[in-house]
Image 1 (cartoon, helix red, strand yellow):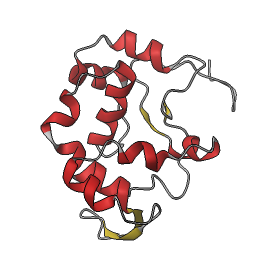
Image 2 (tube, helix red, strand yellow):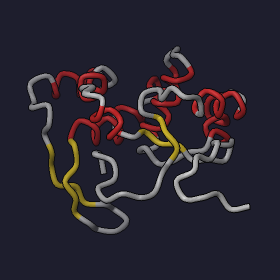
Image 3 (cartoon, one colour):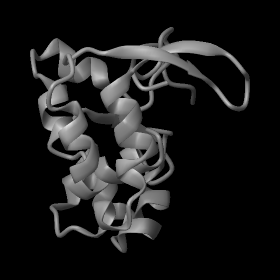
Image 4 (cartoon, one colour):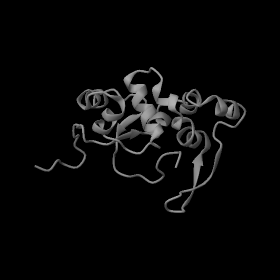
Length: 152
């Protein structure tokens, strides 16, 4: 049976999730303040005096497409989240998922894939992520919208 358009489908261990930055923006949450706290020491000092919304041109290495990207988010994903201690810090499961998605450039990941990285049960992760409450903007990937993530 095919679900009706617009009907809710319960996520499974194979449903891809990502960080929906529009979720943060729609709730008047200043996600940049939260993300600044995740920067490594080197970049925390660099971003201390920069404008909160600084953007720059970024060239996609695979497609050569030039896009405007959020500088803070870009540096967090491409440098800080790649540091070994970024994922090793003792954090809650939700925070670990959030950091894992950042470390993978916010590429969609299924609970099954996340579980392999986090040493958790995929069923536990899908239960956590598929409840009525949205944690840190982590949501199932929906239909593609123009613009993508603010990082690239």
